[in-house]
Image (cartoon, rainbow, N blue to C red; front, side, top):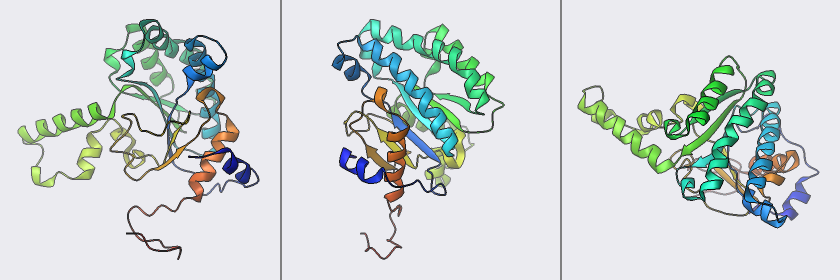
Length: 261
């Protein structure tokens, strides 16, 4: 857990701009609790949360992050109340209509992964338009996981690989980690497919079916801050925490601080 004491201790430190994580993934949690604390409807939290997305997108882009993947709607979120789901499906329409000009101005490219064809027609159109309108941008990739679930992602990848074997396009003996990674929904990101850092807000410490394969060696940071309250200062603290970690990918400590098993 990343707590307030750590925040205060690190507030006087400065980011090492040479060690910015290339791919940051965020589980944006706490919109409903943020609204409840203020005696407001849950949708008010989701609306405020979209403003946080705009803020953090620009912060991450200016910082030098190459990919920002946001868990916007999971395959399990359909279980929520109908009115809330309907509101969530309408958010991308307003969000992209308002924010795409700023994304273009900041050279940010939009990508979306998940079962987009199962979304309402208006939502699908907003998503496709945002991807198209920012396709020429060459800066940070803002990647939304929308109607996404990692178990589904892996299952679909396995089916594609099996089809490739059946069609004679894949030799079973040549299937390896990279083959699987290439067939996952993050495959289009190439070497940037696996997050360096995964952040979850709101104090929950679980992954919730998000990028299970891809985060095998990601650094995980959890914060009590609710997503609508997440701002530049908190994001900076998350990056500082990442920079304090010693990423060994299963190898030995090369900083003389001890070996790992």
